[in-house]
Amino acid sequence: MIDISTPDQIALLEPVERFCRDELPALAAECEETGAPPSREWKKKFADLGVLGVNASEQFGGLGLKATDAVMVLERFATVSTAAAFPVFEALVGPVRIIEKFGTSELSQRIVPAVIAGDMVVAISMSEPGAGTALTDLTTRARIDGDDIVLNGTKRWCSGGGSADAYVVFCRLSDEPGARGIGAVLVEADTPGVSFGEPEKLMGWRGVPSADIHLDEVRIPRENLLIEAGGFSRLMGAFNLERCGNATMSLGLCAGALKQAEAYVQERKQFGKPLIDFQAVQLRLAEMAVKTDAARLLIHRATSSFGLDGFPENMPVLMAKCFANEAVRAVTGDGVQLMGGYGYAKEYGMEQRLRDAWGWGIAGGSIDIQKINISAALVGRRFDQRQ
Image 1: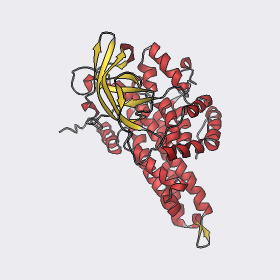
Image 2: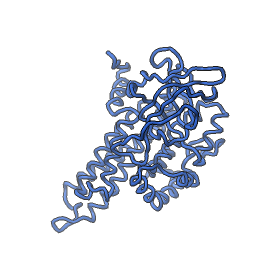
Image 3: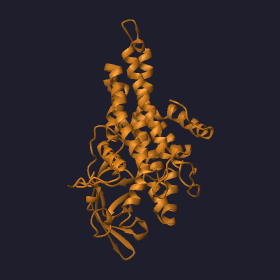
Image 4: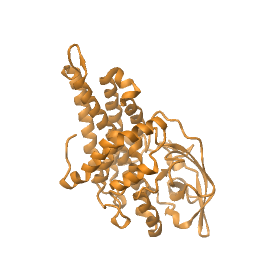
């Protein structure tokens, strides 16, 4: 890894790297074996380390640092395990930032410190059975009823579904068509009328539960309104930070694969000499390193930009996510190839990285959608996919 850290960042990262090296592999193995997310005890360990509030405001008990500091911490966790890193992902770049930015002071004061303390996990719920990439087709409705908001609908592909303590739910808050009717509310998992479907069986991401969320006359206090109808662009501006986190999870898998492959090709011998002495291996390893570091630089550029409501700008985020999502598929694939049978065997972990890698180019907007949006930004107009 090329070190671009400042002295303050080095001081922040040293205990994190030590924790990830010494303690996190045991959690990673447990999550992969059982499919269960990190326990409350593990989340308390994360809280004690200070990693759940890196970029949260100091008024809530956070460190008040920048988004770039947050993704540097997240990368260290993701280098070891997607599942082990996921609570950190949700706390640093996920919907908690939406609550902190747009929630009432009372709601923010109740939720954000609880997340930082490891007492609560908040997930985001956007997609539906008929609204994934076409997110503005969502049909989950929320109506105002006096001092309450009442929700009905079904959400799908919610990472953390059935496991998180609360959900930032994208929903239709008015009869306005398309994006103009969409806003967001906070729904806590134990609210009457909230239920969950069967846990989804995914190719990877063991230890990151996912399930449908069913909302049947779910009544929440009006103070749980985060974004009113018509605020869809603000929601997506905030979601840019989560996309940076998505790219960082890809980066962590790249960095872990590179480190493992680098060690393996220097230890493993064939035809009487280490694999690294073969030029084909040298070329593949170099390509892995270039892709990994290029992803890191693009992510840091994105998190250093400031767009809507202080969240990262759209174009750098699109580029970082697109590149990192493609890079991780290539880098982990090369890792499997370099390790041969050992790369393909579950016992050694590289195949797990490959399985986990593929999901990040689907979640948070597919790779192809990022490219369409990049092209739209380049030429200065949107492409209507409905025509």
